[in-house]
Length: 442
Image (cartoon, rainbow, N blue to C red; front, side):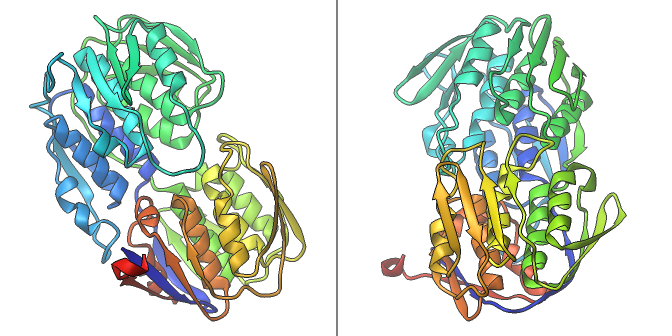
């Protein structure tokens, strides 16, 4: 186990380069199941989630060096940048009834593992995938994935913690998601590329990462209309082929660094930032007092005196304010001038970081899915524990803003989504170090 020791109060000045988007990279890696061949995927961030997907692909005989590098995830600035994958030997079977298994011990680490279900089923007609784990931020049920695949002709049962699915060949169908689901849209989008006939997905997620996956599938030979809209039309093809692709930059990492400089003060040049997909976040930060100069569609300059005005936010599906930025905004609002209201409409259990921020002196009142944050003059350093991926980033930002020393524990959450986070922060002036924690102090 490890922890971060952070001495707060330093302004951030310098240049930061944003890595590839985890939430685009994971479904893109899963999509390699759909076609045998060699792939060259550029812009992959070195994260434990990427390594977990590499382990899962290795179970299917898709070779990648991701799993071999897993012990380095999030360390010392190591970056995968480009990964070569070979799915030529994709397993036809690996259990007694002919299903390809995505085992519990891997799937339990990361919810995005469910993304292999549609691809395996479409490609190999049988699949057995463990129900997924990941961050403890709510139920996030997979019933919509199952319902859509059943509408396409699959026979599905859930037994002993596994989703077991089979089909002759998936059939095109029209399906409406009752709520917007990113992984559900991605899973069925992949499955539909090899289905017989046309599949129409209504109320589909429009997130940039879904668009990135769709563009990758098109590069593989898929026929998809309506990319970037809530209605996707997929004409199934007999087969796809391998392709080379570059993953989009990570808008959540970019937003996290923008929040960091907003809260601490300073000047950051942020490169490889996906400006076009960040309108809601940029607008809220500007309203709160961060000066943002857009140099071009991949480069911004952010300047702050560290004094934020109060703002209200409500999380909602893209293009609205993203739930993955809620914790970071809560952190900077703890010292804002006035009261801020944060409404979380996506997940029912995503305010667990509020209790940790209160340990640092924040004034936060929770009522259901609403948080009222009353700005205080100063945060004090404290020992805090991350509850999930984005909460960990919010706690780091708060520690950078606080007086004295803070310790942030349970970095396994941070390492799932931020590559070399403390190294990037240290390079722009943060007093931050990662240290080992003795077992009896965990």
